[in-house]
Length: 111
Length: 113
Image 1 (tube, rainbow over the protein chains, first blue to last red):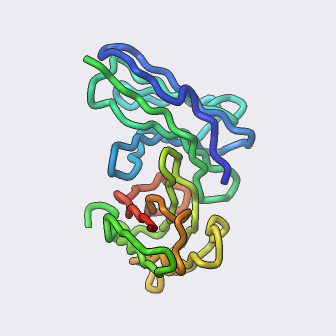
Image 2 (cartoon, chains in turn yellow, brown; image 1 turned 90 degrees about the vertical axis):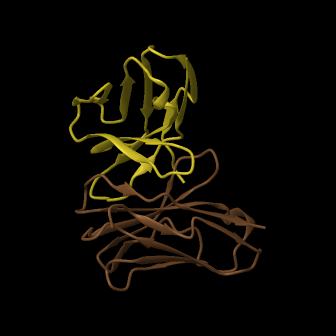
């Protein structure tokens, strides 16, 4: 099935560094969501975006809904060890309720 | 309950065996979704229920996959005559209304040997 393109595929950063990742689609979406998944667990919702151009923050996380509605960005500031995990973007288009997920960005944080 | 509960957490099936995976959504959540997550991939949509009605089953990979939610709460995903390519984590999610962000369960890891 279709999966959105996420980059980078993986990141190894030091504690305290800022992180940026993005997600692109060939289709237009009306909603963009960012999830974090840890081993053995389901994805946990971090941020939801509902409007093109919207910029939303949740603590150290900031996400943007791209103006073309075909992309989204997630930034994490001042990373800490508990930020380790796989980050997935997900888009929802039209009247559909289902989400299309990205391929994931694996984040590793070293002390 | 407080979250979405899935059982069993792990299932090993011999090729050709039928399996049934259970999902208990958050109480009162109208929408329920099943996703399949292969190793190293993002979740892929299988099917969607609103209450007891299965509104979208476009993601079910074959007629060996069947899902039901007869009373609009608990849902079961059944896979008949399992094959090795069915090995994956099966995630269930629920949401209070259509269009809201979902809450996922921890998933059932199915291994077909």
